[in-house]
Image 1 (tube, rainbow, N blue to C red):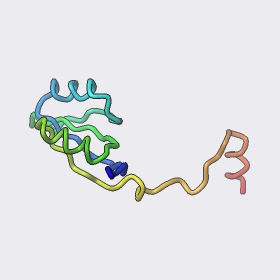
Image 2 (image 1 turned 90 degrees about the vertical axis):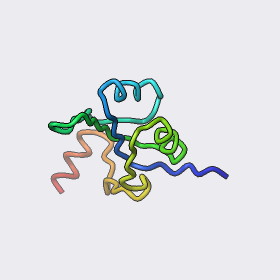
Image 3 (image 1 turned 135 degrees about the horizontal axis):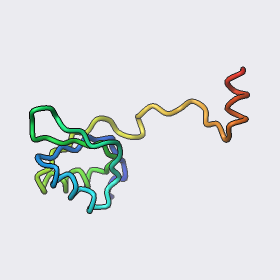
Image 4 (image 1 turned 135 degrees about the vertical axis):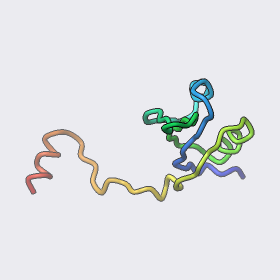
Length: 91
């Protein structure tokens, strides 16, 4: 049975064109594109499953798994609207 676990990852490309190609794959990538100073290296964060991670590796992308998403910190309380948030902040 395939796993559905997803991981917070960093995807690294060797060129800006490889980075833009990532956008055509329909993956859950987010955050700004960053470029390493003095290097031809671009990175972006994402939320991927192991199959997607392996697939990107076969295409030549370097994927670093940072943490399993289910183990990432979550906000302790979810506030529904601004008034609820203000009341919670006032104590």
